[in-house]
Structures are given as C-alpha cells and as structure tokens.
Length: 100
Image (cartoon, rainbow, N blue to C red; front, side):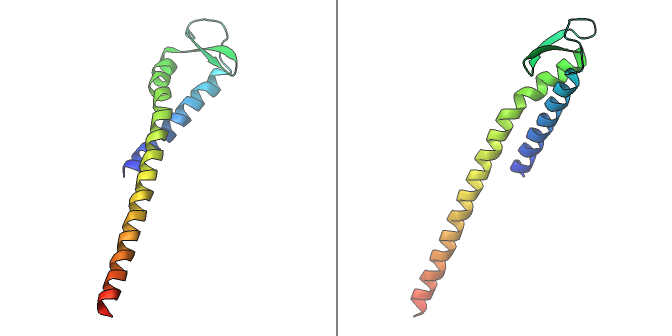
C-alpha cells in the first residue's frame, strides 16, 4: 500500500510539474502581471502566475523524494520476499529430512 501511495504522489507531482512547465513555455518571458514568478525552463526564464507558483512550489519538491521512497520500499519488499522464500524452502527441506 505504501508503494502505491508513494508512486501515486510521485506520478502526480511529475505530471503536475510537467504540465506547468509545458504551459509556461507559451507564457511571457517578461515579468508582466499576472506572470510575475521567474523560473528557468528549457534554458530560458519563464514567468508563472501566482496560482502556478503555489502548485509548483508544492509539487516540485515531492518529485525526487517520492521516487526514492518507492525505490527503497521496492528493494525492501524484494529482500523480504526472497528471505521468505528461502525460509520456506529451508523448512520444506528440514521436514523432508526428518521424514526420511
């Protein structure tokens, strides 16, 4: 469940940031109201509206940490799964050895 939630957060933030940056490519390169928040996008300075800035400030910092958490949880899940399989195999071999 944690992997799903973190993946959802990471994906949503990635899509949101991408959408805002894509829209910003067509927006003003000069600080004209309502475009007053500068950001460097594709090597050029573009300006965001107040609303875009609010959303971008929340979504951008969530991208990388969310993907890291997903990766760590997936690695932990795989290790736990491998450990469980090894233990199950060991228990089966022990049971077979005691029956013989």
